[in-house]
Length: 91
Image (tube, rainbow, N blue to C red; front, top):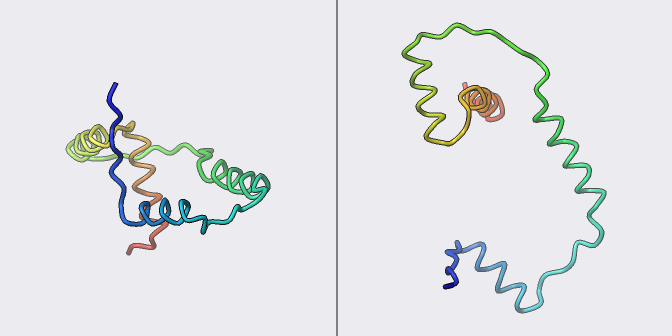
């Protein structure tokens, strides 16, 4: 079987080069930090409210089509749009 050559961007190539030169340092025991961020992610992704919303059928069809193209369920896609809008502070 052939090995596929990875396509790396500039930053990824710099990281590999730095590692090969021995310039990278170990972060040590990161289990506490990892657990902290895992808890943050779990709390962020927790869905504990259900809402009902009325949309124009045309809009819902567009949302479903777009969700299909990105490979996620349409309700998850709607939630992600709302989250992205609020997280970026877009007005």
